[in-house]
Length: 297
Image (cartoon, rainbow, N blue to C red; front, side, top):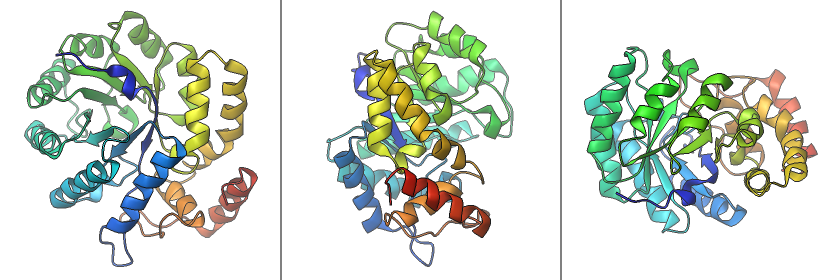
């Protein structure tokens, strides 16, 4: 298998999923979001990630979100499909559906809650990769899953032809640097934490799967592009400009703050599914101030 891995470099937005007042999928708003991100310079769009509230989507809704985003993108930018699960069979099923729908890549999160061994991780992702001819990205986020995918396991998985990258959100720079320095030349490392994107790029990473790109897609794209072009002064300037918003996006559980921000920007309505709740009043005013300072509202 051979893939054009460069098209997955840059800024990938972990897109929010808009809902209507009765908490149904808001298909019109979702289509508008895809168009807006294409217009604003987002390089890749991720469907059904954590920020997209994948944990509360039914299988039918999950399929529909992927389908809508692939259709609306219409090959203008690649669509990466979140298709992970703590059940290997379920991850394989979602991966097959994303493949049938015409997705451009799969993002597969480390199985959560059941805490597999490192060999368990390997066998899980091997099964996912064998279920598709699409490129597959691993997703290491131990803060949510409860178990870290070791750098050595990631490097081992990189030998599987269609596993072409990892979204790395462990924050463990010793592991990250080991991975970057020992990976194959065509294996991508994407930051999974906005505030660590610049230092990871400085270490040799290739881009970001971003929350803050929901609010500031052009700035995130420009920051990553500047770093990848060795324009570090511009990259640092944009990093520090965005840093307060990057941090505030996690003042409450993601995606509560970013969905509130996108509501203030007029992109969606602030409907979020239980067990998450809308942003608390005490945090709403500082968020509005941050958005005004960045000329986003």
